Image (cartoon, rainbow, N blue to C red; front, side, top):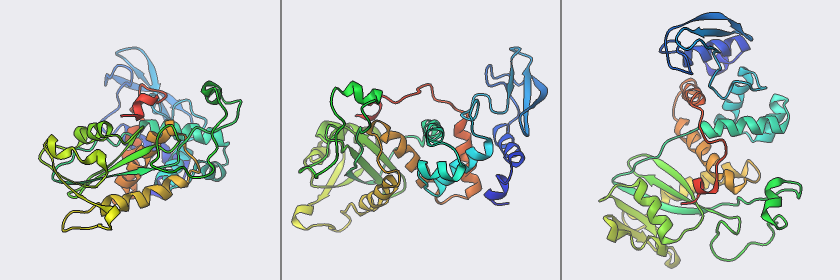
Length: 315
């Protein structure tokens, strides 16, 4: 059965969702007790339950991002498939689902807040490079965020010379690719040696072999327990034996057009979109049905943090 058959109707989506959520049996999302019994129906194809332990009622959507949502389950599943599988933009999704853009953007934000691909731990041969993306803080003057800036929203006109930075609305994204498998994308406010080393030290084990370019922030890695080799792009050196960062440049060439689909991302939301991109990359080689099952599993682990703050993004 294909993934489109599983979401062909609201009843089919409800059955599919119950199968995924209660695969180990129905339990109370409030107290965790398995002493539950049926308590009628809830909406189209969904069920309500009563917990004998805490005396509370709940339904199939309680404790998930689908609860109290204006979107039906079928619309949610279509949104997941189109956004993560076919890389549609939020505005395109609002047109396809016949919903207002703000309803779709709120749904996408709730989805991305729960997409936790997890931190990858690298070992062996690892390539590291940085990418600079346009992700500013633009908007109208009546925006609360803009008013707090104390200045007019910055316009992106002529390209600034030199490397990008957080303050110039072109933050860096460190790309880490393990030649034995695994990849990670980490936003940062700057590319100084301290920030680069902190990102690398959290994700790459000691005694691993690091391949980078000749950027000065990487030059101190050999003194931190890593075997470090680099290529000098300024001198036309791209490959020297096993030393190259072609895999990182390949991922950058995929990430940049994926971000451009969304036509401008606020830099405070950059981490959310990178989590979504990692989920897309992770599911690209899996069966579509299994991929959407894994995504559904993340929807009922609601994060405690409603909004990401700057400290969540800057390292």
